[in-house]
Length: 424
Ligand code: NIG
Ligand code: FE
Image: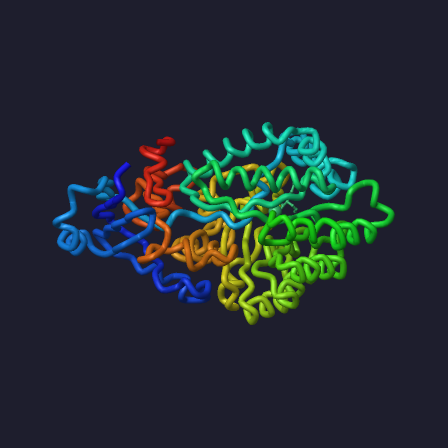
């Protein structure tokens, strides 16, 4: 492999430069900082120069022969897409529940009857490390083919230490062995295990006194997430769990106001969470509190679509000043997809976001939702050479021509890893 990679002459090079310190809000979410006929020079995995093709061809005239070339003529070039909320590591699948829901059963009914998250937990507990690794590795390959170069991955299908540990160790190995960067989150508080149904506080205690300290001690996760939802964890329990994580250096995230309004957005602002995710039923007060504290709203319109629910009000959140990001929520129950580009179209069609806002939401704002804003999410000198090239001439067409995988080329750390839509 050569050291340098020269991506040349994109019809639109979306840089999003200048937003590494804080996520974009309001009107700034539409300022994509596009360079027409744009080129990028990457060396040793890091972006060295960005500009028009003319500028860069001149600057690197003496070194053109050293670089591998990617011709992006007529194509759209963006930062590698970032998926800030996935349940990547799991076993099994739940098409039977999909069928039940189509006949009227609800997501929570299925879960309360011992299915849903509990069903995937049983499958994940039974799977070996190797099985989980192989299945998740395949999913990462699919993510890559959809233009995604970084994913966050939650545990939470163990709910006892051995399996939570197994999931986090698999995530660690995936991060080491797959080109995609995998950012780990502990989510022991994903559901209350059956044996604690009558005494959920005993389980909360177990999370706080045993599991969270061990996760932190072994360096297994950066974030600590909780499913704050009626019938799962109350806002009080969620606060305790998130505060315990913070005491151990784990940054708070929260599954908030997904099915019922439950003041999850307010709680996210109160505990200083980096993000609050879902937010279908978030109150205006909660949105304002998030905006004030700069909590990223990670919206998951694929989950709303798949649960046949109304999407979060992305438009309103952006107008209020919440920094909005988008994600697949990839998981076997409420969003079995890896297609972030499809989620992007849903962002436009179901949440009133513009194509420009959606691009910001899956790049720089998604990076900020996992505390990676200074490394990825925009194309600027010094950032990782993570780049996605689409077979469309402009960024609007990407979301307009929906349900199609337009990814042509993916570059990760300056290396071409997808060519012609296929793994290189
Ligand atoms: O983000 N809401 C909770 N957790 C996941 C779904 C997990 C599952 O159903 O397996 C979510 O939607
Ligand atoms: Fe989720």
